[in-house]
Image (tube, rainbow, N blue to C red; front, side, top):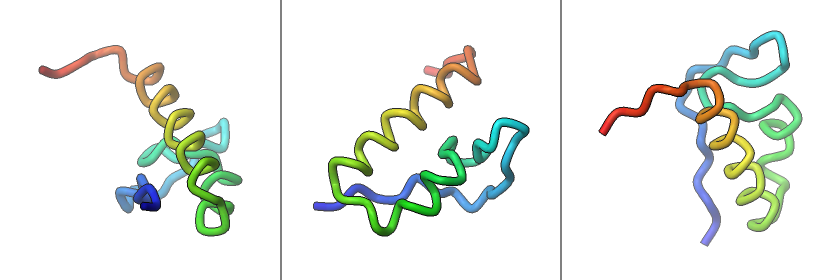
Length: 60
């Protein structure tokens, strides 16, 4: 099963070329639909790490 896109339709790139909605780079967004399952899982892991680094506050 293919991983779902993390897109939340908040598409705005910051000064580092990272989407402020899904935390993927513009290259990761562009390449998403042609990427295989393993590559998508790697993108999701990087996006999760970026999101966690950007927001130190955790809700329970």
